[in-house]
Length: 296
Figure: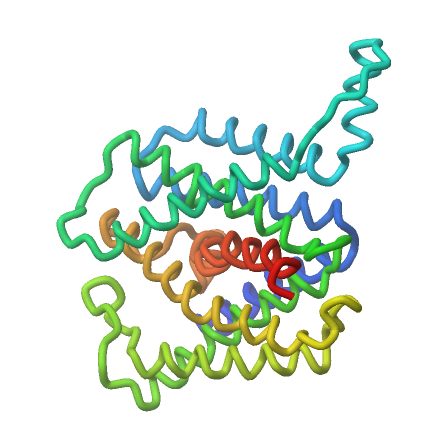
């Protein structure tokens, strides 16, 4: 089969699966990204040469537990009380848990950026491998599911809007870079990325954020006057940190000496190759949403 056709078919299946699961229900969305997490963990363990048995078990258990506690708090409390046969209300303060998880993720994100620009880093200690597994793979997937709730209830348009911005940034960074790109962005990590492509991707992402705010997503009443600012800000976050996330995964692959993280998507590589931008962006977008009520 022609490589371009193969790439087009696998990409279409991926987008259809993604959109249908997001739009169908909260449960299908959480389940799909749980599956993506398992595959990404498997691929990442291959990248960093880490035994897969414990990481796969741990991420599955952690993701399931956090999902149940976060999105089904009342049902979880009632279930625990029934098992214990007590009438004691269990206070599951998920907000405090979210803050702790977010702090851990942001600290590891900073570590990832330092790792990206550290020319001497050509191998990873065993402790670092587990730290990256936690803060670079597992927790960002948790926050991908959390940002879909925005400030109130589940809103599929939020996560779809985020993916539209990711795809726009990637597409126009490639097109602009291929057309007029002359200055390399970080040649030793990703020889094809250019400064011109990076700027082009950010500009078109911000414009798309403007269109999303005007045509696709209506902000809640308390933020109705700031919808354009919110989505152009998210687009700016996507353009900058999405590119950094892509480069970080490229650094891991360069150290491992491989081109793609996996082969599950013909012509595209692995799940980690497709989600490297969004997993780095998700915690920062989540932080942005948490700060909105305080800066409105």
